[in-house]
Structure formats: structure tokens, C-alpha cells
Length: 278
Image 1 (cartoon, rainbow, N blue to C red):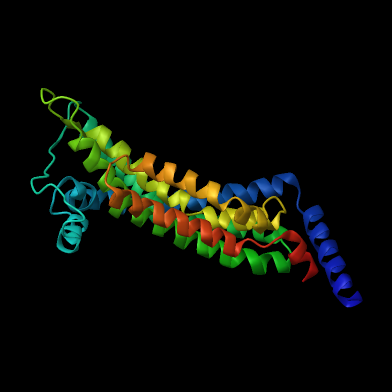
Image 2 (cartoon, rainbow, N blue to C red):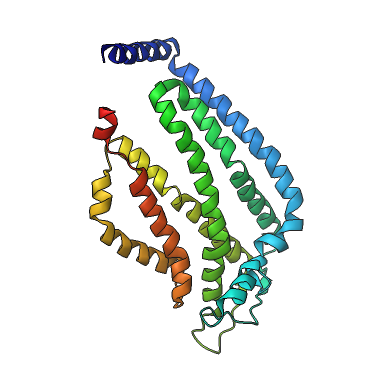
């Protein structure tokens, strides 16, 4: 026990020595180069996504506007009477602004490049904060950063395959009056497409956030378990807002991943007292 305390004391002294050796401007310089490298990586990827965008826009971004979308085909094949998708769903996206197509080309390329470069951004953040961490903290946080990256991509995938398509279908097929014809603007489509997918990517970071709050002593496992019923109601409301359709199947497609994330958060949270005892 004394050796362990001595080791921790030595680590603290080493960290303090390193911190004192580096001034504020030294830290700022390290941050500046990290941002510069991140910007360079983003620009390189952006060039690739900008060149490839005309080839993948119809096949990827606009895919949910047609019944040819693979998720619609899959659900029609296995859904039977449970899921009844309109067989003539085919939305034509219109453009009413002169520069909108060019600006959409740029904005969509930037969004896709940022998603692709996300692991590199996480790596730069990790390299920036790693020198200030102790060995035990590094051992815990390294897999957390890696897991958070995978969860982000998983959330984006679920957002693209389920959340956005069913939200889009509901809003397009919603008919306030038969005298109104829906014409979907390109900018409106892209805004909703990007927002819902990125929101799902961020939502899937919930277990990582819960784990970090547990380490800081802000969140406890007992709290999550005690208020599980309340959380289920909140998650159902959230799923209903994300997919405001009357189809219970669509609601469950969103609710089930959210509930699994909550259960995963309970699993990964460790009370600060338990950590200190170990």
C-alpha cells in the first residue's frame, strides 16, 4: 500500500514538473499545431468527398427519396402486414435558388469529410490531453475514446438507415389538405438529412458520457437504476419526436436503440467510491 501511494506521489510530482516546464504559450503552441494538422487532414478528405459527391449524391444522399432504398426493400420483404410502405413513394427534390446546388455540393462534402475524419480528430484530442493524465487514467480513457468513435459511427448508421428515412416518409406523406401539393426543397432536405444523422451519432455517445460522469462522481449507477421507469417514458417521448409517425414499428426502431444505450450506460457506469477502493 505504501509503495502504491509512493508511486502515485511520484506520478503527481512528475506531472507537476512537466506542467511547470511547459508555459501557457507552449500549451497554446501544441494546440495550434493540433488544430493545423486536423485542418489539413480535413481539407485532404474534403477534396476527395467534393470530387466524389456527384457520383454518390444520388446513390447515398437521395436514396431515401425512393422506394428503391435498400431499407425500404428489406422491410417490404420481411414486414408483411406489420409494415405497409407506400408502393409509389418517389419524391422529386426541387431547387428554387440559383446557387443552392453548388452550396449543397460544398456543405454536403464538408459534412461527409468531417464524419470520415472524426477518428483523427479524436486521436488529436487524445494526444493533446494524454500528457496531463496519470497512467491509471490513460488506461481507462484510451478504450473509452475508441469505443466512443465506434458508437458515433453506429449512431450515424442507424440515423441514416432508419431515423431519417421514416421521419422523411412521414413528413412527405402527411396530408393536411388534398389541395396542397408537397414540393420538397433541396436545402430543406439536406438540412434535415444532416441534422438527424449527426444527432443520432451524438446520442450514441450517451454511454461514454455516463461513464465519464461516473468517474467524476457526478452520476451513480444507483441513480440510473432508480429512475429507469422515468427514463423509459422520456426515451419514448424522444423517439416519438424523432419519428412523429403513427406507426408503432417505426417508433420501436428508434426507441429500442435508445433503451439499449440507457442499459449500456447503467452497465458501464462505475461509482467513484468503487473505483477508489480498487
